[in-house]
Image (cartoon, rainbow, N blue to C red; front, side, top):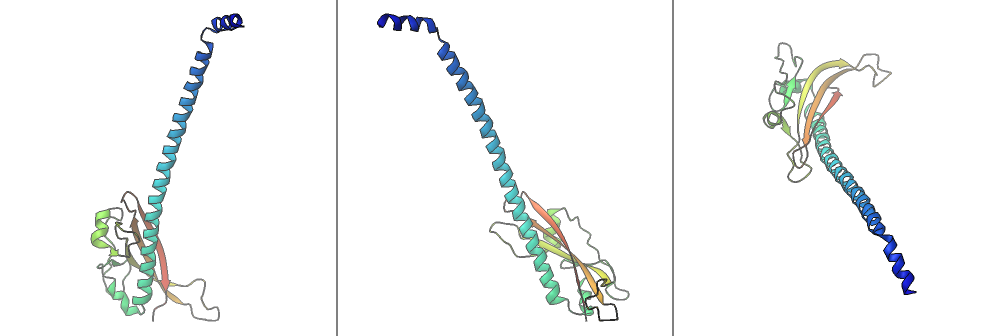
Length: 185
């Protein structure tokens, strides 16, 4: 019995070692490829999270601006506030002979927002405060007719709200626009 065992060891000549090393090499390559894929997925998830934070901040600023319009612009005389200061601009005359005051800063410049935009509520700690501007676009007739029984066309006043939000780490920003119309007395 010892004699046949000794003969079989002499005949193998390292084939098992070679096959084992090949399998180990293949497993190592597969492991490295899997780790690279996981690292890329983690980066994509982190980038998506930053973008979502910036998006939520910009949407919060839009809602804040809409609430400001609802509470502070109730009469035609309130349009005089759109003088190019405090984040309120006008693209149309607010009264006969009034100056038109469009925004003159670059909407894509973060530092310009700090001095020209109105601060909104911040959602997260250590996040730059989202900001917004409101532009008066002018009067418009309501094409849908809020009241179909009303024979006189309804005059609505249009505003464009532009808001910006940043992620917590500041690497992502999101610009959002909203159009808002309302009746004024």
